[in-house]
Image (cartoon, rainbow, N blue to C red; front, side, top):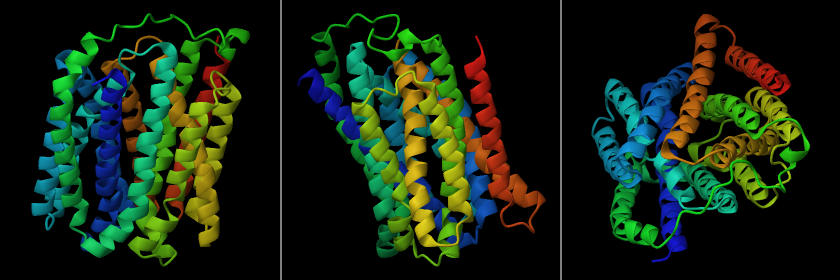
Length: 394
């Protein structure tokens, strides 16, 4: 097995991980709505719970992978996730048990993503890191789009229980694939020397022609990405409510509410091959402004076509912001599992803050159906101010 073939195996694991997690967590909200009567407020609180745990689990699990090995971390993660999904299927009649399992899932999941992010960049030159990050982003984004697009149909066709047992099967398949890849991992690395790493971006990077350092862009991207996840996880949590407002079945919701996932995939594909956005603040700023405007439009729209069009821009905005965070994380300094853990921890902060803000607004102002929208928009505006302030610092 060659170095590139080994990387293809890890990309496959990343794609499968996205399929499993997307089928579970995206359609769990439909399950909670249909079986326990959860509305927007309840689903937002569930997401906030997951995000709060995600923050601390990401950092610690990234450290675990760095200390004990990325492959070990993945083996425990994949096997543990399959067990959590099986337990969820058996406990599907109890909302309390499901919430406990959501919390456990949020911890075990973080044994996978930081390790995968580090493995795809392992033993790569600076140009290789850029290439691997591009393929990795397109792989998981494509998987997420496919999962949401087909998930509604599977929910209707296979029954709501598929939310649990279908991911369980995928996670178990990942564990078995990893066992096979593990046999070749050390042998391949032994014949692949560590390439020299430059201390700063390559000469062709535009940052050489302006005063903002690569480290400053890393900080700005790390600031922006949690706010992108504020918007993303607010939207995912209230998607059953949007579907109900527009009289969409789960199958129709999968068709029409997956547009932004494809928009994000398109953004990743473009940003992978076109590198003119590297170390250019105006692209990050423009994406943040577009993020706020498109989210408000989606949440307030009364016509399906408006929701669909706004999702295109939402996907492009979230794509550039996420790509910036992961690219700068891997490009500035050494890529590592612990660094990937910090990247995921910032994502967890966004997963918690957005839904918690929206849920709190609906709790305090239950008479206002749009309270969550404006509360989350205000939070995003604070993030925009922080991004501009960070850019203005010397």
